[in-house]
Image (cartoon, rainbow, N blue to C red; front, side, top):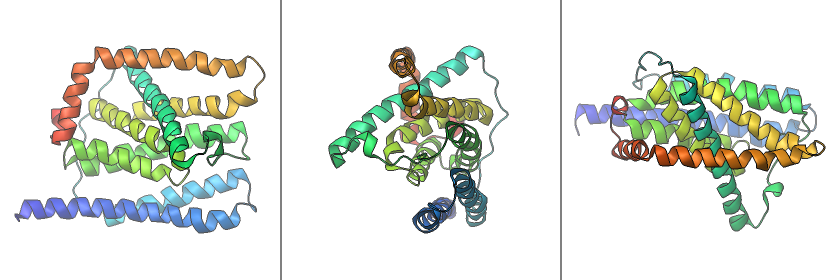
Length: 272
């Protein structure tokens, strides 16, 4: 085994070990601290503590363990027009909607439970709290970690490692909240990684991430408790989103196929 291969293997091992340590920190909090303190602290305090533990402690631990692993440098950010931004947004919303629906079917088939029976990690919280801790804080913290720190660490090992690795880590991280999100979060992770590689601009993924989560708050938390006709709005919005999503996939099928080939062959990120 050559020196370069050894360095590559040790580098990727450090990144995996660093993420595993970060995940374990969150898991320990969820299994022991959260379960013991849930009934004693309010919604706001619990989520503040949760993010302080996972990101305030987890990210420094990740950086320390992976400090010797090489990190790729992103080129200068690329500005995109409003039309392309809307296209990226529709890709994300479509992936989240399709993945969520398919995930619900799989969960029901495997567990025999309906999606209503899955854990509601915003139970007891207000709409304002859900908005803050779903639409504001996560898009900033999660994008900084998964689409900047982690993606740059994995980008030196190829586009496949960067895209699939960050998407998988993104999905695994969300199991700290609920297993019901795994599929659609994985698909979102792929879309977000694609946007970052194309634009080199994390602001775009932060904004799109926030809008996707806002849609989640409205469709799953806010809409059902609002008076008519609010609940009817959700399916009326879902249909055009999915139509646009499918049109974008069909129109851009050649680019999509080329991107899939680049990922599967694990080519350098700059060949995307």
